[in-house]
Length: 257
Ligand code: PEP
Image (tube, rainbow, N blue to C red; front, side, top):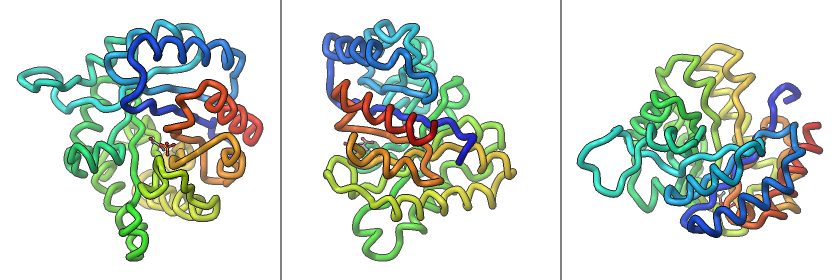
């Protein structure tokens, strides 16, 4: 992979109100402030974004939102829009996380509208894709992921695709302690890159970062991240502990350094 800079992101999900988020962010800033070879970002709940942004100022660790609604403003009770995340200091946004898809009913079409709204607001999206266990067992993993790619990226201008990071997260590996084997993950990452290469100019596929997500921990990170098409990690559970997240970042630095 050589030229692609590793990118490790922590999805804090529905955890850590402002006080706890600030404490974790301060611990990360202290531990990782010298880390210059890995892009890093954390995704707190919306209400904890300002405290996290403040605690991470100058640390090199970016802050993102977990989900932005497609409309910028209006009668959408409970929603937060992409320009609002931007105004609060976010640079990135998760789009299409499997929990958004399964718990909140975000279809491929909804994911696309959210992706476009995020790009229009100047946020850098992480587009999450991945198959369920039933889909994998039915031999449909590649077709499901291809459908998600087509719906999410199909027809977008190349410069917009270049602003996106993909996260391949097999749903059966998220929060389950069950990780895709490095070979299983690499196989899918290579297929994703091949799909991008077939649909966009070569440089887009070569530069595109594809994170792996699904029970990434300090003790399995190096092996996953050493696969040629795995360019980083989207980390859930292990990102709630400063030491665990930092050790995953350090694994990315050492594998790609
Ligand atoms: C995630 O939330 O994107 C995730 C991969 O979670 P976990 O690391 O806990 O499996």
